[in-house]
Image (tube, rainbow, N blue to C red; front, side, top):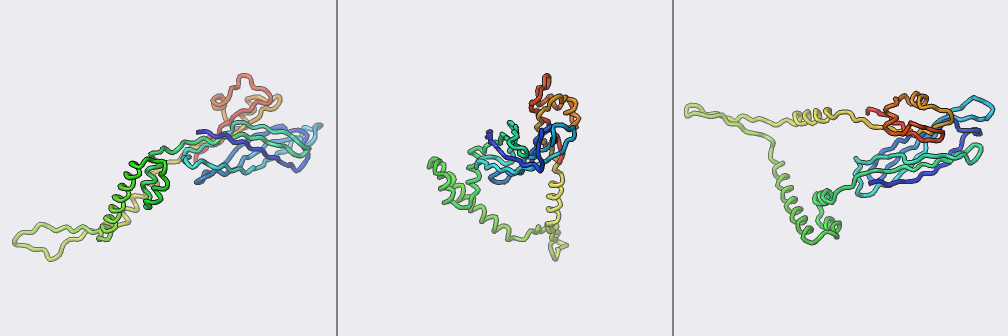
Length: 256
């Protein structure tokens, strides 16, 4: 699924602006249970006076949040920039317009039912499944009752000491006075779990830059600015005939 969200914000500069000579957009965000929160990062350079070649740098962080649908799978959430423009509305103020999208996968109904089945409260389950037919509700009730019985059996089994008694074979001539006791060590189990956790490999994620092409700016200059290469830029953009005002998507691959 894809949801496009408009974002408009005014940025007040510390000085007057004669012209914006370069501007780019990045974004950083985190996914929580029911929302995405992060920052749009606007940066570039500008001239304070038209009769000078001297440029000054600027960088601003613009916070944003977006509510996620209840059925969105958090691990599938991706934020993408659909459009980015700006206008100078006063001598020291620009207004940025950002259209960004939230792409996500939806939970399947089967997974939702499994979550309901894992609940310990039958009444809550029935309340949440009003739209499910009566036969399915009865099946869930029976499942939960069996689950409760299994839980009691496990609790009773846990009360038994985790020991295995091994008796050596005896002959009529020899009789052992005591059994040999072998205990299960919790440390051994913990070490195995820690090894599994350490085996998780690093993941790679992509940060996208949105660059607006300035007058007389070349693709070689842009590639050098973002420390990338021509093949990578070609994967995301049509660069055969770039012109002033075009927006280029520049990916940056980062290892976590």
